Length: 107
Image (cartoon, rainbow, N blue to C red; front, top):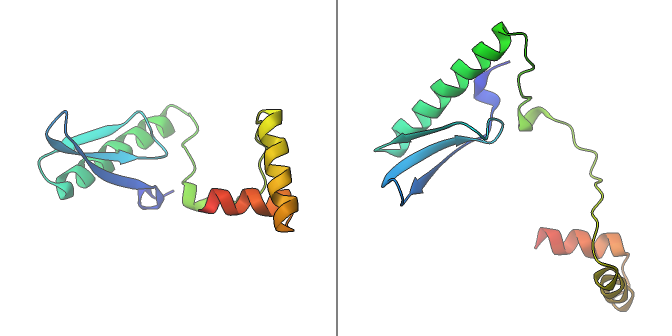
């Protein structure tokens, strides 16, 4: 598995007054740097080291989010009053509750 397939992000940390590199598949890891480019380079190196350590210890290495297959279905629990309200909105709009919820999540 290549570390190039992981989901990286660089953002500004006002608290640290530096850029911070992050990796979604390794949420406990980060790298602070003066520039976004160095933050990305740093987090990629930390991820490579962590993945190598996990591999040598026989631990499972996180699968890149980009390579996972998603069914398109998930369950969510909501209060019954909200369920009723959403069902009424769907009925008034002439769409299924699933279609209404999907549109709300997308927007």
